[in-house]
Image (cartoon, rainbow, N blue to C red; front, side, top):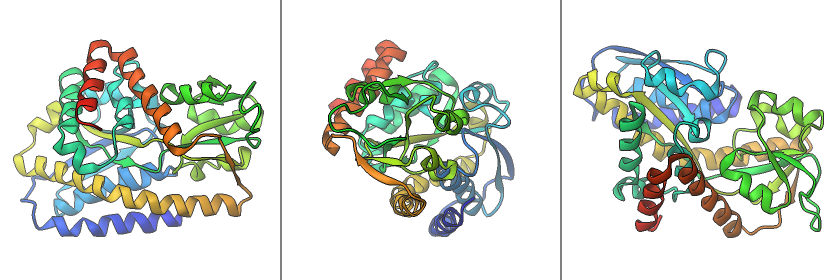
Length: 328
């Protein structure tokens, strides 16, 4: 884990102490977590590991969570073993299981205000969906409002834009790639560095925070601006396991999830500054993608909701309409 991640993770853990006194005495539990990325990913370091530290603090050490990464179960195959109870908790993103449901990916299109997501009922809507369809209880939806960005091998040409370029892009952001003339291709994230280095792809779309740990800036040194959208991760628990816990333990897990959501906004804004500076110091440069932030956000949000409808049909339409009805 990078030093700046360690420092921010320590800050996150300390911030949990204010909640520690409010939680009851949880029973001892040793839980197993799957994470879609390893500890060199800023999201894993500050969200997954940060959540585990919060749970430990709130339970006075009674509840421990042992994380395992994609070296144990591939990122795109982690949902099923948690749904089945082989593992207890998953830290992931909805784009990694769109073949199962498009709702998780569509949460990226929702305004990132933590409390409005909850008071509007959107958080509960998503939670009910995963409970009834995947046997999973949402514990937290930590969201990086720092969004996604393009990492390109060459600077964006204002005239030709991405015409003729192959860009690694998952479904929620292939619309913005296509609108710039590029061709969206899917490549497993573990192959991204070598594929970019060898010229198999001309760039990739990746969360604005988290790329530095994979050194994407070494092979794609042009950082597209503006970054766009929000990145809403999911921390979920096998529903049967959650229901088997005592009330105090359940409260600890949910309180930690809410605190993580509150912490994440500021932590990732700070991380963006630190990671941008680190990449620029290593030779990276910025390049405009030719859109204003509002234009890029609109394209991204529209596509994220389309994914929900394409993958989940009437359920996706219901989620889209519910979010729209709340003005979010």
